Image 1 (cartoon, helix red, strand yellow):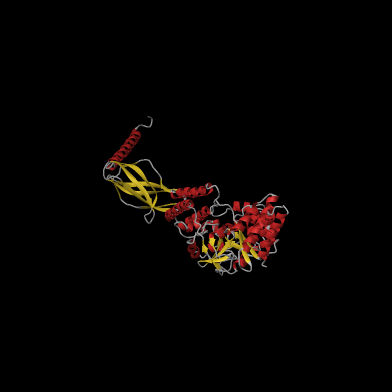
Image 2 (tube, rainbow, N blue to C red):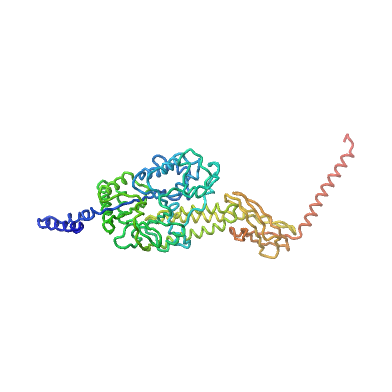
Length: 556
């Protein structure tokens, strides 16, 4: 008799015997799942994220890294909890990059933490940079995944040695700081800062239950070939395991029930709840394995959050699973190497409200790129803001949507401030008494870079003519400069002029300012003559007094 049929018959017979004796059969029937699944050989892989909270602007500064990597710091606790255990670590590349960007100025604890990370036996795979919610981009008007552009703006040459003369081979990912924390690293490229010897190339783990079928094209275009999806986000044939292919992409399917059971087990605190949660975890894994038709079942457990991951709780959860002779812990690459079945995406799109919110962010980012064209190094500004955008996308949605909206609005406010950082300084009314003269226009630049703009003056009436329609002006970082626009007075009166700034390509910069000019044409000559007459009178009076003094007797 097959084991499953025998187990069911045993449970039914035992229930009838207890019923005949007057006892309740319900408790024994409830225990039946452990019997039906006990003999199913199941390989289990676990993947957990190693992340930090958002609102870092896309890079962790030295003080934050020092706090996170001290003996009881957040990153130290997470690494303590997972190091050396059968858990694949999905790490946010922002953490590694933030340490490398600082070079020799990185805190000692951070450099030692990075060295330790390079030596652990766990398999490492990357999360999206800043743990960004990538499908917010693919499902919006952007239609593509977003990555960092450059980190050059954050590098200080004093913290690095000379650049390498030769380009390393693509497979070479060694970091001098990982081998010797006191070494002076070479001046890095963006690729150097992001590189790591990850266990799976082209790996992507989107947020749980956020993927639609159209996202796969964007993932493939960016070079992603292996993605992790929840079982609720995938439609698989009955009896299929954890490895599937969808439109040419390998999809590792995390069992939603087992993953939720793991989260419950990790979050339990009371002894009674801990035992029940660990038992429920093992049963969820065995049930998932029993539903598969392969000789050896495969189950992937994906832990969603690791900020407060307890080493003791993770140890207990893993020990409970390995206590079953039917469960074998395997690495993520071992699980991924099992035969795949063809599956399809069960569309689970982002909410309309989040797409609407992020579209506002993307619109602001496009406007910034246009504005930054006036800067001496626009790409540095664009690259810095890209990291801050990814930081917004990394905000973990909670039951309180205020967290998400706070970050969106913060980005939008910063964007508005940036795009109004170069403006015409409002001045008092200007008096023009010459037929030909210059209209002084002061421009303020609050950016950390020099900018070049073109001043345009447009009179609203015909009392004034402008000699040069565009006057070039360069303003150094965090300073003001004054440009002079040649004008000609045609008639007396008060005229309003519109003063605006544009880029070299004619794109508008900032808002238009209106100033009032009092034109007194023809006054220049009388004023010059009057001034000359006054000078002549003063000179004559002085000359006469001098002669009179010389003619007076000495005794007077």
